[in-house]
Image (cartoon, rainbow, N blue to C red; front, side):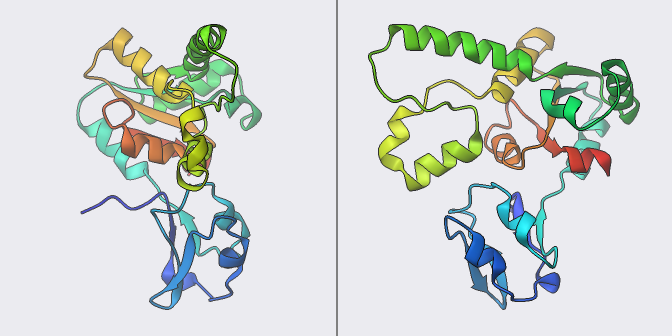
Amino acid sequence: MDKQYPVYTLKNECNDCYKCIRDCHIKAIRIQSGSASVINDKCIACGHCVQVCPAGAKRVRSDIDVVKALFLTGKKVYVSLAPSWSGVYDISKEKMIAVLKKLGFTGVSETAIGAQEVSIETAKMLNSADKGLFISSACPVIDDYVRLYKSEFAKCITPIASPALTHCGFLKKTLGDDIKIVFIGPCIAKKNEADRNPELMDAALTFDELNY
């Protein structure tokens, strides 16, 4: 069975108000079987429909059970933590690490390490490249938007993995290929990155899921 897309409709809660359809800038929602359903192949997982749905029928897939299953494998499970955590939680770095370890994670590392490596590689590329348009590969929402809706610019996306995936690769190279890695941050679309790159990122949780 295919994994559920990161954004979906809870059909029993949908009031057929069409607000999500009207507000979706890329028209990735349609009426199907009596409710407003996300068109997975067109959706970029920006989460706008989740915000505007007055009935709370648009939901973000929870991967909490996936992470719990990772703990049961007996493997070491590490966190790639988005640096934006400090703007969400009013606690010290030490406290944040302690909380995550209490939940069952073996260790915590900031995704910013990957961002630093991406910045270095991007600078090298730009210094040796001809003048032109370059689109950062850091954001999966922008990447999908360009590839799906502005395909003429797809060749301009930098051929460098996102900071999150780069960080996951760094952790596996440093700590061993057999570890499990969970990204935690604010972005829904990181779930797409995890789904598409299971060899690097085993799961992605939003801060809302962490709060659950």
